[in-house]
Image 1: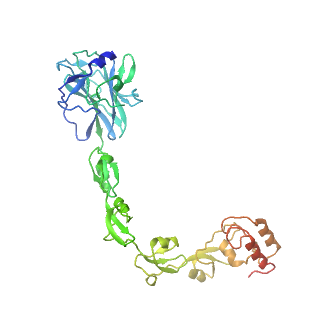
Image 2: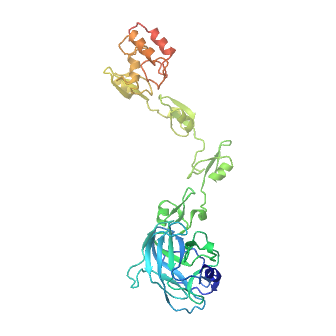
Image 3: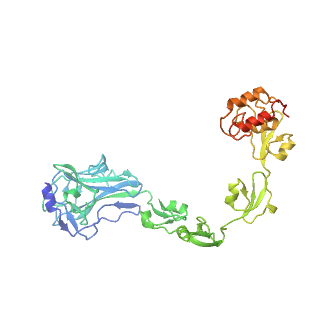
Length: 432
């Protein structure tokens, strides 16, 4: 049987009659290149119960609503033929299809036509409706009930070569095989019609990037829709111009980001324009301690932990916010307040940037401990004595985060000689 298939697959036919065009929302999915009046090869070497299958890929989210199979004879005069079945199947592992998704039994094939089937039953009451998603591969397999013979009608292929992984045959004997490896001349003219809920295609976005979107999604994103089923590789989206700053001259040109880098410039970012963009801003910077420095760039200001007040601003014309810090109360409590608010509350302000964290876990804010004790008073008893020395020595040589232990008097993260010196300097004294 396989020898006959090889011997006769090059029979050519010049007649290809297509059905009426599909609706605008329907897409015909095909591997073959056959077109009206073009040349095709009649594959007359099949026998009863063998199958020809095309592996197709859905272009969208939608449903398979029809299958199409070109059926031709050498004479073009073969009578209608009742064949075994058409099956829509999951992809499986090539060349073996997966489980059956839909079965059309006993299709009647008409010679000289691209036969289209939209129903699973002869009474045409059960429409084909197989859900698919964009990029999903599925298989349409045609099973013969009759042996075509030399003069009978059969399935066809195009004459442009057989695409790997797109055509398979169920042979008797042999089972599922790669049609290309058997010498089949082209891709089977076996197609599917997919009804797409809404077609998608390449959308060129304002920043020059590309995404596959529906027309409505593209419009909402401010993009330029390139057409149904157009992919982003083919779209070649134009790259937008943006401000490009040159440090050596302080000048600005509107260039694409790529051209800006080629010229040694600094891209200003998508949406910038030299007419409104400031290339090298400089102005007042409000620092965390409430002071102000003039003529800093935004980056330099941020490096100091400050707040950039705007290009062209000066410290004389801005009012920097008063810094906050730990405000310690005689109750042992702590609040983060400005110095002026702390004074109103009769608290003891620990300085800008301090907080109320209790890192050593002794129940009192570390910043407030420094306010109410002297170096060496590890237990906050009001004096520096042997108990304090014992505490320091138990932690001597250890390291941790700032304020991590009572022995770290200089708050540098470790207990060392400087801490011991501070304690000994105050040994025997009563703390203020």
